[in-house]
Amino acid sequence: MKVAVAGGTGLTGRHVAWSLTDAGHEPVLLARSRGVDLVTGDGLAGALAGVEAVVDVSNVTTTKREVSERFFTAATTHLRDAAADAGVGHYVVLSIVGVDHVDLPYYAGKRRQEQLLAAGTVPWTVLRTTQFHEFAAQVLARTRGRIAPVPAMPSRPVSVAEVADALVDAVLADPQDGYATELGAEVLRLDDMARRVLRRRGERRWVLPVRLPGRVGRQLRSGGALPDGEFREGKLTFADYLATIGP
Image (cartoon, rainbow, N blue to C red; front, side):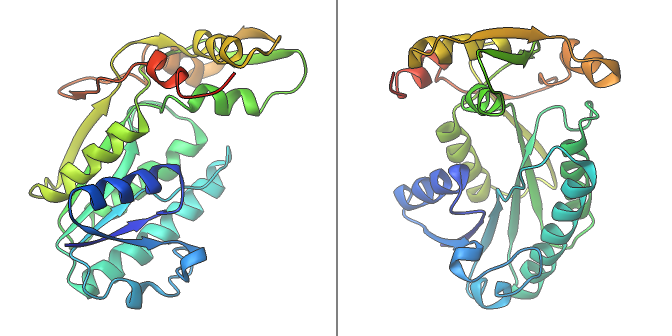
């Protein structure tokens, strides 16, 4: 089966492509480097020819609500409509646990993405996951100097490889026209994860736990980024991830 992977050259997209290949399917990578622009729709019609399913792991790096909403509105609308025109039978989107409970600016775009998907005609499934094991390192990369401020919030980090496998399982199953959840094997605090990353790297920096202010801070501290309801639990731990990165 040919499966289009939107954002297929990114971290998650590469893992999805590997999982599809291992399962005997043919991934079709949708990315600007492959001549496809989700924001404008250029190249989509040709890329989706013969495709039976779509996995959308496309992303934009931003902390601004308007940027997130603009990207996901344009990308999802173009991909959804092109998938319908191509006769795609299943559209799977990667989303985030807590996207409907936490008012982070980025999450506004993801909520819009989910709404647009549900309003379309292609049968769909949304897989919401917790943050990846890589998230702590990504937060650290945004800091400078000897002191690294990191939000003191509970998390249940998950392996990107396990998420990719879950996305492929979702593609191969019947469309849910609803939501599934995948999360990590353990509950950890993000600032503790950051300290462990620094120790593994041998970096002498001090992690300063930051209590985020306002409504978003309260939502995160109260477990807004943790799952409720039914979920599928991953097996790989944060220690497993740390073992894969060099000092």
